[in-house]
Length: 74
Image 1 (cartoon, rainbow, N blue to C red):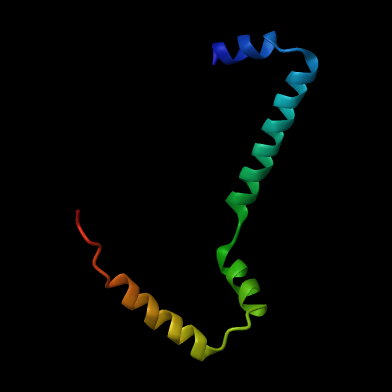
Image 2 (image 1 turned 90 degrees about the vertical axis):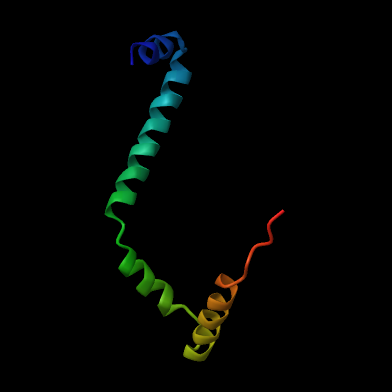
């Protein structure tokens, strides 16, 4: 931590402000990640979906087939 403070002090005022702005950005992003509710996100996505139940069932069946593929060994 001391190294970080020393290096921060070596920067000019504009670069220090850039670091502070970046830290603010990371903190705001972290807050959004912590409060994000994935069930509501899924519900929002489903509202705009054009896929029918039949399409979804086909995709799920294909997914099972793809998971059964054996990767060749070298």
